Image (tube, rainbow, N blue to C red; front, side, top):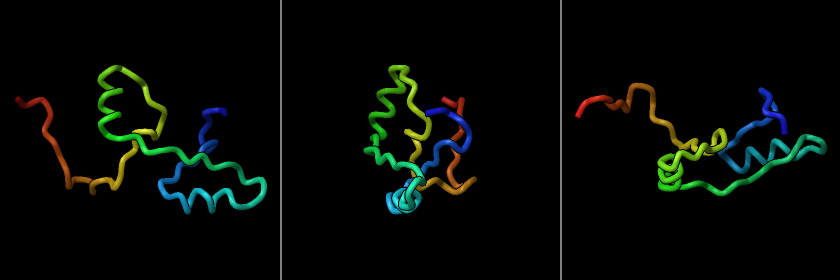
Amino acid sequence: MPDLPGAVTYFHDIRQATAAVSAPGSGSALLLPVISQDTVWELAGAGVLLPRKSTSFGPKPTAGLAMRVLGLS
């Protein structure tokens, strides 16, 4: 499948994904298992590059609500 803008749509809700492909000719839905945060850390530590959106976790914090100072001991 080409990695072109708009070629793939991502849904976090199974109902939205199945509704998007319910009409004939509207495409396919791939329902993938959730990857745990521990697995993400393990793979990242090993230098493994994961596919786009495979590390998308939610709900997202509101902008400015969660901040972490980097570079301090």
